[in-house]
Length: 110
Image (cartoon, rainbow, N blue to C red; front, side):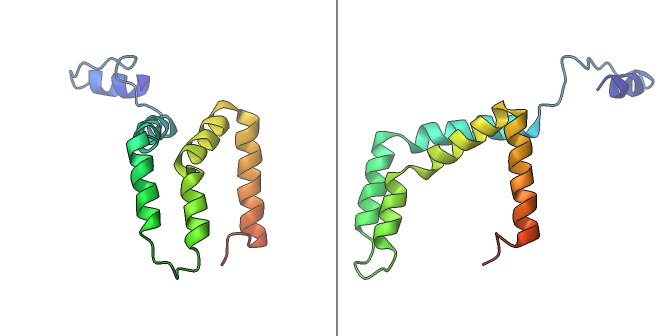
């Protein structure tokens, strides 16, 4: 950003690199998902999800599994994992190694 400030100054454009920094993309995603989690874990929304699950067809093979997944609040769990990974460089490295190994060994293929 300091280099951008110098380049802009050559064209008589005022730019404060400390005041106009670009936020880290993962940080922005974390902030956004935090807002989503806050809204989706709202009691009214949880009741709505429960009512929606009850409206699923009775003969749906995965009906029970789906209801269990909703009851576990998967969005909040995912947010907790991301928050934990974001807090630790060692966990980030381990997660990256796990993804790399999974790609190499075909863990993610159906």
